[in-house]
Structures are given as structure tokens and as C-alpha cells.
Length: 116
Image (cartoon, rainbow, N blue to C red; front, side, top):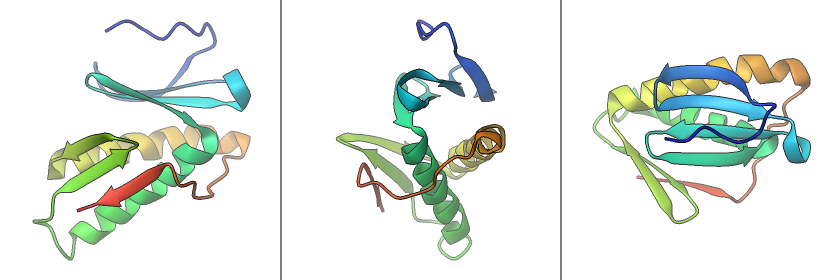
């Protein structure tokens, strides 16, 4: 996998070699969420909303643990196991802790849908 070309990238959180979150100040702030072969390029606002969606999914699994987690971003779906969902949540929370020092917005755009 080729690294991002922005010279200002900063690693926020790492789950594994191919699962990590970087940020850069380009275009008002972009978060790059890499998950295996997919990399999502999100505004700070969209990333804040994604963090909320994943947190809701983790809370909901306590009530319905057998329901799979499928996150749609545009026309791309990321289907995750129980362990992967928790790994993503942990990684996002670590990245948020880094980003919130700069005042991350958390308003919901219509970019994401959460489907089961």
C-alpha cells in the first residue's frame, strides 16, 4: 500500500499495519481512515459523525450481539465482525482524543448510513 502524499500527515491511531488513522491540515483538516485496502478521506465534521455511529453500534451490540455491523460510505460497504467493530471503535476513540485538542465538530452530515 502506498503512503499518502501529504507531507503534513500525522498518525493519530494505529490498530495494525493496514488499519490506522492519519490527519492532515489540508482543506480545513482531513482525516484519513485506512482499513485494509480502503482509505476514507473525511472532513473533521464527517469523522466526528462516524465516531458517533460506531459508538452507537458498539452500545447496541450489548442488546443484539448477533447483528452484523455494516457501515456504508457512499456505495462502499465495510462489513465487520464483533472484534473488528471493537478495534475500529478503539482506534477512532484514540484518534478523537488527539483531534479534540483542536475542537472537532460533531454534526451529522448525510454522507454515511448505518445499515443492518
